[in-house]
Length: 390
Image (cartoon, rainbow, N blue to C red; front, side, top):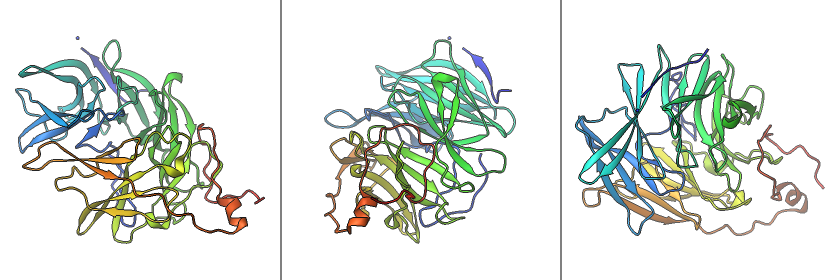
């Protein structure tokens, strides 16, 4: 039984506020500023009040620039956007409380062109959210979440409008791509009243589901970010502290333990990773990770590498579109910002220098030695390395 009905054409459980690296579970990919997987384009809702419109940013030129894509009818606050690699922007609008329509917007000289793709209905308590931009830059996917079943839809890039591509048992959230082709998707799934566990969904095999994270039997294990080049995984789990989520990292397909660094745990701030440095092939320890830090005094940026024992704290540029940014393969973190004098800006931050080697005993060196593993789906992620040393 599918969770959504389709028309073709030419929330999750409430949770308490969290601290110390915890973050409320969210059914939707963060909206506000969404960047394509290749970093070439981005899109956001611009304007104010009842005069909202889609704005597309070009990020891969000598300087960033924005192109407004307004229509005769302003956009609603809940409109969802996904930019595509060809410069078009997918727009998902909620109509009459249950019907979700999809269109592609693109500039046509002084006006905005709109190509309508079709609609998907999410009846009753079900809701539909767009997934993060597909790595192939061509397709766009949506997730329709029902009480017991989650359906995945190809809403752009297909031949005949929106089409269902997978049905997953359980209530899913999140959405992280694990490859460069847009085939393997990781979702955080809850079955009944059980814990949340990250699973992989193979979109080319009818939505075949495989366990991804299983740190302990009762722990809630969510995948936040992944880098296909290095295999680095950013994880949130309450396994080390039941009832309290912590940030950790692992390697896709590796037998190394999942680590939960103390430097990522702040007592009075929420820490959320939002970007990982690409291009570090099979070198997860050297990847730069950007983190949004939210505290009572405001928000700033954390920069960290798994090989480091500390996190660098950096002031965000004025007008930062908080939680948005991208790494270059060369180690530069680019943060988008908007001010009265700069309506489309990018601030570049250099990655912190690699830490000095820390002296360790021979026994410790054996346990902590980085091992290169072929990136394959991770079946289990132990809290500690139980293999004998030596």
